[in-house]
Image (cartoon, rainbow, N blue to C red; front, side, top):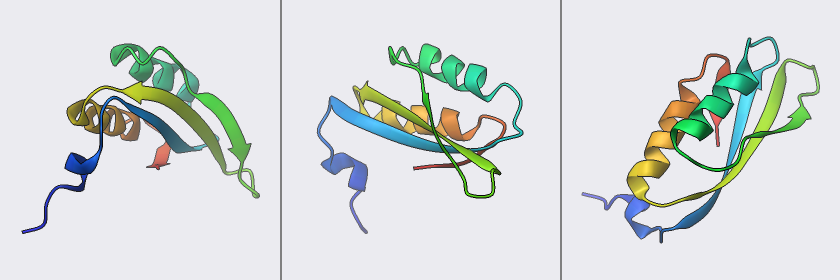
Length: 88
């Protein structure tokens, strides 16, 4: 059985989430801000680049994560936002 790769990370961890969303998603900024507030990350996501065809918008969230459980919870909450296609 392979060891959990998350256990190799050292916390607190400076982390950057790249969030790919559909451009036509309603309230994406407010929904992402709600996730950052819920987890007390202290920063909101910034708008990044637009896809070549204008279908997707990238958002970047740079923050400090305190625990592995928090890292997983933030990632799951971002992924659950309506209109989010992928979280890297």
